[in-house]
Length: 476
Ligand code: AMP
Image (tube, rainbow, N blue to C red; front, side):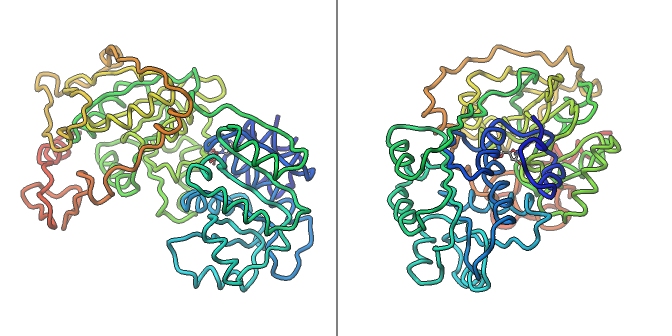
């Protein structure tokens, strides 16, 4: 099925195409036509399935075809967390690109009321909210809910886990009874279904599998490597592989820029893509990558979200993603449409819990590989890996590894957990804060390329990357 078959307006089709989506995901295919017809919907789907577009695209279409009452919001989307609310707002900006008149506000805690109240006063079409702040805003008399026609309750099971269900039910009781409601949950235990039954009228039910498996066409590999060896390891991996075009993912946008500079210096045909770049730069970079003018794109998750690149040969995870589902999104950029793809991950020894979460989610161990000439420590939780100096074996220093030398080694198969455990495990709490992480020690002066002996640390012990710096200089 194509997006054209779903019944969306030409403006939305254009926006979706520009987002890089070539065809609808199963939840979009199952939900959008019915939502456009005004039906209630019960969707069993989790993040990563494309459900945001499944409820936002019809919402935009409905807004464009119905009349606004003065300054009254007509669409309400409830999210359990601020991050998700902001993510939905981001997605809205993408999908409503050709509907500049559509206005929205995110009502969420942790920020001052001023800006949110101002926006409400000016009038908005869409409210994206976390339950607590929404009730708060309503009780302060800043919001009129009698114009809501389209309600989305997203991540219902998380709402329940977080104790928000009573708030959600209260919000629903404040809305006009004549409305369309869409209810999404990753799991559908009896309690959630009971609540859904009370909210929905003759809903269309759509269930899609969680994106727990990467495409069969993606060959995966993971190498455990010391921090100081990472860039060298990545270069060796790339040289050993037959890379046509590749995405390299970093967890932080700051690291995207650092790795980009380093790769550039080493002669790779590389560009970068991260959230701090303005839209025109991002579009230009994407075009160059799509047109094969650039071979390797170093990127962050946020910037690369939704990218659909035809025939991408490789994905490299320079960092293990902290959210297991991101791993599936990342490696799913290759191996599309039945074409083979290869995905390799560089893990630090103390990335153990993130690797475990990924392997639990995908239900199997990622085959371990070794990079010729570099020591491969074991995964452990002791944190010893972060400050280790480079340990290249000198004899192989000048001879890059080739594919046959990157040998998989036996990996322990984790027990397959039940679904609930998998979901929980796949969302480990964030590791140390950004500035806390070893690789991000604030360095005054020339940043990445300053010789180690000249580095001045601000407060914490200096980063021991002298070996890495030396290598950066002599290599290539
Ligand atoms: P979601 O489940 O809504 O969080 O979406 C997960 C990711 O899939 C997001 O990065 C979206 O941009 C992306 N996405 C949504 N729909 C599509 C599609 N039809 N084709 C490719 N990517 C998509």
